[in-house]
Length: 516
Image (cartoon, rainbow, N blue to C red):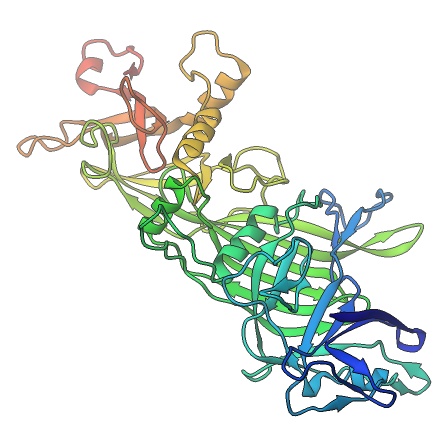
């Protein structure tokens, strides 16, 4: 049975704390155990430790007006401490109850994601330490830790009082390992332009909770790469947490991804996560997600959030959050051929390889979709980014051209990916009376080649150069061709071409380029 909580407010250093006692009673002089054999705990409730702020559209360094920014706070945090068996009694004083160095912090057992009663912090019948940080993400310790530096009395220097704070300390040179075990599912929040979306929070849970992902009955558990969050700093205060968090995870195996998708679950595509806050306010967030470009090149979507200072004539310098996203190409070159999934043995694709010379795109148009395929468009112009590609034909010639591409995040269920690609490639680029969508798609897929000579097919061994022509334009498609055609990432092909054939031009010099 718990007594309390009792709220303590100390204005001098802004301490606000709720204290609850489990299996402790006051005997007139000290706090002693009610039942020597039962768990004895001290529960500490602290104010919300993170504020999730609205992220406006990109602003210039000097702005004349901006609407007030909305914000939502995390829920309160509860820390649970076990009183060791060798401590017979405790003083009934704030200094004693805030002296956590001699107590044992209680963590949520690995693998558990739901409390005994919804909304509580009780797991397996015992209250545990549950911290909501950042907003909507529930974390706990992943190893033995202790809290240091909590001030029993206000600390004053030169007439100033320091804000009450306590620092989480781990066994590895102070670095702390943390584990996210659940997200808060029944609370809405602000996600527009924020890289830490609901899906990314779910990825963090999947990759750190160590919860077993089971397949169909009787099958082996699904293997998911697991690693805790590393905290170089984690300081809790009445105003919020100041933290430096970092997480990095390996790619799921193709087998694990397939099994997750077969169960209708999304496979996590989060690669790295970095988060810096000061007193509960975001200063920097970096989220890196794995994916591929429509040509099959492995790529990353790198989304960053920074707090920037902007000047306003009426109220001076104001700090706003600003987001920025870029695509980073991780696999510069992709090979194509008869073994890569083409319907007609690769003859649909005149290039044996495509190399992308871009390594990082300029900032992307906001907001960038999360877990959805999208045309890579630029913030500066609102138009497509033209990737520079160098194709290698069947006679090892190098042919350069530019083309917009689609970024496709990893982990999408096959049918969902196919639906998204169909929507993105909707329209008929060869329509005689094209709609605006058809015209835009035609511009994306029909690319000028500038008369470069290239082999349109593999030439016979005894006739090198016989399939080479000066190409004016190539029209590309994506996916499997034929009656059962469908868009497939990594299967670009040429659906039409404008070429010049010298043998024909000898008879009719004014013949325009041949389209096929």
